[in-house]
Amino acid sequence: MMYKKKEVPTQRIGTRIKAFGAHYSIVAVFHYSNCERKRFNDRSKEFLFGQQPGRESDNLITSGMHMKKVRTRFPPSPTGHLHIGGARTAIFNWLLARHEKGEFVLRFEDTDRVRSRQDFVDSILQSLEWLGIDWDDGPYFQSERYSIYEEYLQKLLDTGHAYYCTCSQETLNAKRKAAMERGEKPKYDGTCRDKGLPKTEGAVVRFRSPLTGITVVNDVIKGMVSFDNRELDDLIIQRSDGSPTYNFAVVVDDITMKINTIIRGDDHLNNTPRQILLYKALGYPVPVFGHVPMVLGSDRKRLSKRHGATSIAAYKEAGYLPQALVNYLVRLGWSHGDQEFFTIEELVEKFSLENIGHSAGIFNPEKLLALNKEHIMASDPQTLAPYLKPFLAQYRIKVTDDAYLCRAISTLQTRSKTLLDMAKGSLFYFVDHITYEEKAARKFLQPDILATLELLLKKLETLPDFTEESLKNVFTDMMEETGLKLGSIAQPVRVALTGGTVSPGIFEIMEVLGKKRVTSRLKAAIDYIR
Image (tube, rainbow, N blue to C red):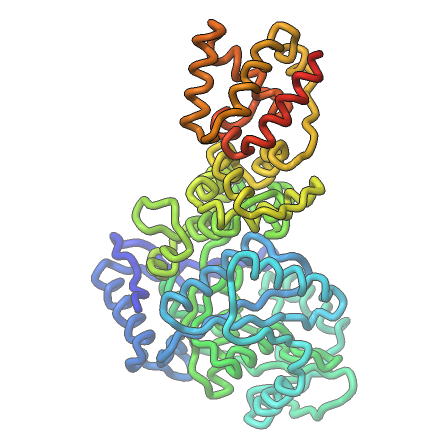
């Protein structure tokens, strides 16, 4: 496994600034030379190859563990549809698991009883399946695991790493306000920390965080980031209603599901030291952490609806190919030389964490659209056919001849940016009766072309070989006999066959339509002119 970091000139690696009202504190700043950075890279590799990790103590805790088989996870919250940022996180974890021949776990963090909905669960599952992301274990649901959380909570209580707190919300709010007025960080002051309170109605459970030392996140993407333990107050790990909080539940989940590699957005970085302390308190090895930069809009703000579609379902409905969207999202933060176009197989083969960038990815809809067109052009018609059928169904077209559909697709691939484009452009292949565009009919289906169409119909009815080459020969004969240029014959024929003036090449569409459809539509055009 190659988790090495790129070697760069001396630079600042780990500055982290946290803001609390008017109070700011710098958590840690690291400066690494190339030599020092190499030593860090070597330690990261040791963690991942299963060799002894670096030294740990109660006050200096680093992430890293013994690795045998990579086991990653994706834990969406079913409070909305799967969005671009979440999908990229899922793809990164899935690619890493597949590249390393490891395992990928799916679970739903559905402890938000108000906002979690089954239709969002269904939507996320459908989006993942559409993207081609399969899982080896799960899906699990946090709402079904409360007894497991209780077991691990009791372990923390029994070992003195957690305690009951009865401070009211009003009291806590007053203390926070007073701390901010003094210019201090508004954190819990430990009122109940050493009281040894029993469990009572309305009490919460807090984790007993260390009051001194630092916690180091050995991040395989960002480098080493240090957090002063004095900045980490005693977080609540169980609410008064008995439900677990996020940081506690995810640690228990990752422990019990044997997750050893966690790749997620860097908005989770500030949660990581708390989670590392929980691993330490529970007596379990710390997994490998990697935090990827966020996906931003063109204004460099967090991607939202104002930047356009953000859900995977919306891109599916808009006619994008899943492999194109996966390709684009992976490249939005990862690189392999200058290569832009990747098949899924190539991504699995080439993906590694060392080539994930350190800057936020800027989502560009135009680039995604261009890449989608490339994937449409590069795909086999047989691959595109099942994706196109639902869009044809929107026009009440039910395909019964897949071979005919594939021949039609082959004529439209270079002209289609999306499957919506392709479906709209292919309608003339499947309708029984052609409706002429008014402007096209007025210009090209006039009495002066009638004799030419009748002559062409006669030639085509006796044509034994209805191929592009033989059709070209027929039109060449027509030009010689009538003295007309190709366009003067082809455009009226195009209108007769498709209803409009824009289509794939005339000989291509005639071959695909076949003799029966072509001659039938020419007869209809002749009758229309008469």
